[in-house]
Length: 179
Image 1 (cartoon, rainbow, N blue to C red):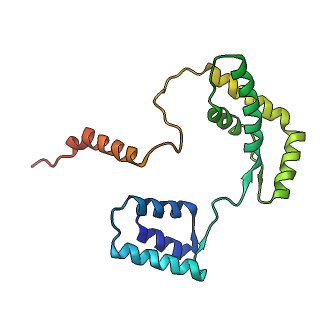
Image 2 (cartoon, rainbow, N blue to C red; image 1 turned 180 degrees about the horizontal axis):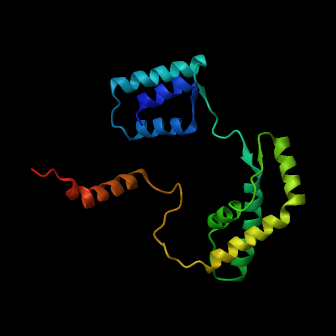
Image 3 (cartoon, helix red, strand yellow; image 1 turned 90 degrees about the horizontal axis):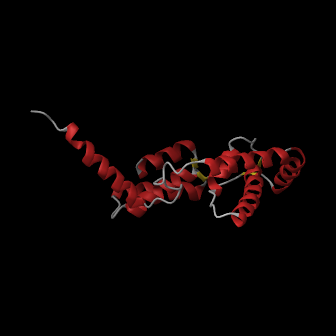
């Protein structure tokens, strides 16, 4: 999406989402030079933000307390297992597996988060432990069938361009104009 379209959308909605903000930042970081239209759009966005016509949505207005509870449990169990054996477990895979099988516990205030924590410790701790144990068992039994997979957020920007270039090289001959 272009800067102009992002600004147009933000002005229409009255909100600048974190995704929109990130895309504008990515465009600005990767462009060697911005056009006059792009500068004018950015100027309109800045004016709208200053006047309150557009509101920047904070990155996170809520938390899922279940994430911290699962991570706490998973870290403790993984540390025990790794200390007693020579295997290495993937904490991210374990937490994601368990979280996909547990109810979310969202909160928007610290008081709400504390309530969710105490409720989860009373009512859900056994379920959390069981799901983490199941996730660890599956992780231990999982073969290394995709060793080339990449962790989220670890890709460099140039890597995507390289992948697109490789795809174009591989498939471009199929789209040549026949005369």
